[in-house]
Length: 233
Ligand SMILES: [Fe+2]
Image (cartoon, rainbow, N blue to C red; front, side, top):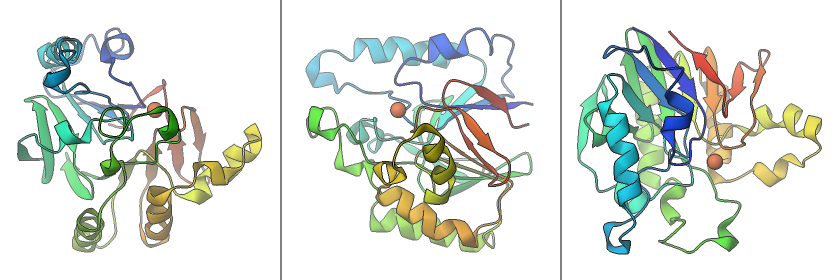
C-alpha cells in the first residue's frame, strides 16, 4: 500500500490527483491537509451539483481520499455527515472512500500513528458571509480540545505523523521571516493550541496546509505543503 499527502485543493481534486494518482489501487490512501472544500454548497442554494460531480469522480477512484478540515469548509454539512470508525479513529463519511478525519483523532494505518487536527481562522472573513462562506466551527471547541488531549494521553503523546491545517507558531517563524511577512498575521486560536501541544508531543514529521506555501524544515521536522505531493509510505 502507499500513502500520499498534499495541501489545500479548495474543492477541485481532479487537477491535482488525476495524473499522479492514476495507478493507485484500493489499498492506497491520499491525504489532504485541509481546505478540502467539499461538500461546499448546501442543497438549498441549488449549486451543489458541482460538488456532487467532483465527489462522484473521487468516489470512482479505487483509492481512499481523507482530509483534515481547513477553514474553507462548510462545517454545517461536514458535521452532519454519518460518523464511522476508520483505522482506529472517528471520521465523517462523505463517500465510502472520501473521509473527513475528525479533530483530535489518532489513526493507526499499517503501524503508522497519525494525529489529525483540522481548523484555522479565515483571514479573509471580512469578504465572506457567516454560514454561507465561512463558519464559526472553523475554530475548535472545548470538546474537540478535550478529545485531542484524551487521545494523545492514550498513545503517551507519541505519534509518527501529525496532520493539521494551521501550524505551531515556531514552525512559521523562519519561513515568514524569509518571505517578509510578520508571523503574527498567521497566528490564530488553532495555531495557539498546537503551539501549546507541540512541545509535549513526539512525532517524526508534522504536515500542514493553510499557508499556500511548499517548504520543508528538517530541523523542526515540519512540512508546509500546498500543491506538492509527498509519499508517506
Ligand atoms: Fe487554503
